[in-house]
Length: 105
Image 1 (cartoon, rainbow, N blue to C red):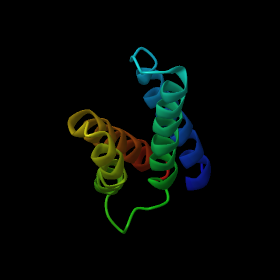
Image 2: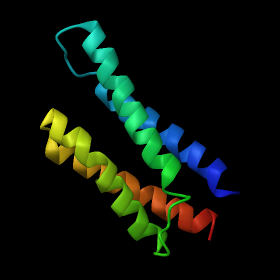
Image 3: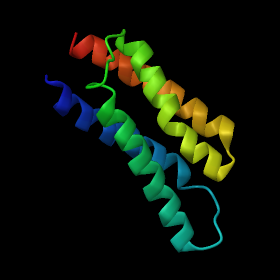
């Protein structure tokens, strides 16, 4: 499987997972809830899309961790929910890095 196809699949799965875990949360309005879920989906979709293609000449696990944490920082700063966003980004990056290493080589 090529890295673009793998990235699309990983991005879709990670985005749906991240959006899904936000559904039970309470928000001031339905609009804010929808915006938060869509934002989480797009943020995590991009992480999943980028990791299989951006190895930086490093092991995909390390590249996944770097990209996962690096692209999670802006959302963590804006929401001030540092731990959950950074942890999900780091773990997701490692998992996608592992999948990339297993599938792409």
